[in-house]
Length: 109
Image (cartoon, rainbow, N blue to C red; front, side, top):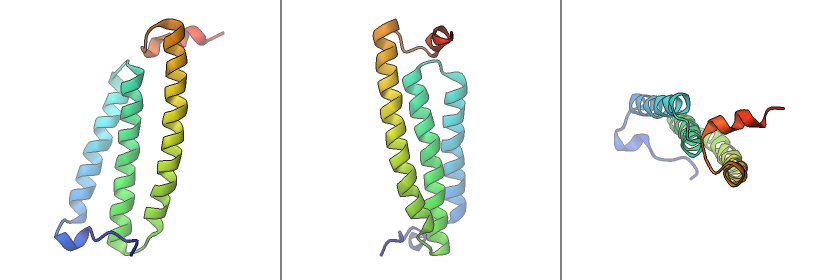
């Protein structure tokens, strides 16, 4: 069966709502306050995972597999985003010897 048995263990949907909100807020605060580009990518992934957690929780709560299938596609896009983002960071580090986000201002024409 594709649906997870999340709610048979007694954990309510409110727990998942609060937990995903906390994860998303931590990721959003990290994106807004940090200057290290590797940490920025990790915070973006944290925000995506919070959204995925809610999709799986609601999918299991309503008994449909639509949300879990959508999560699969989000994970594929997130993997591609991480690959492209890390390759850009490697090239920026080779040229500027730093992973600070401020170096991307130098790339403007």
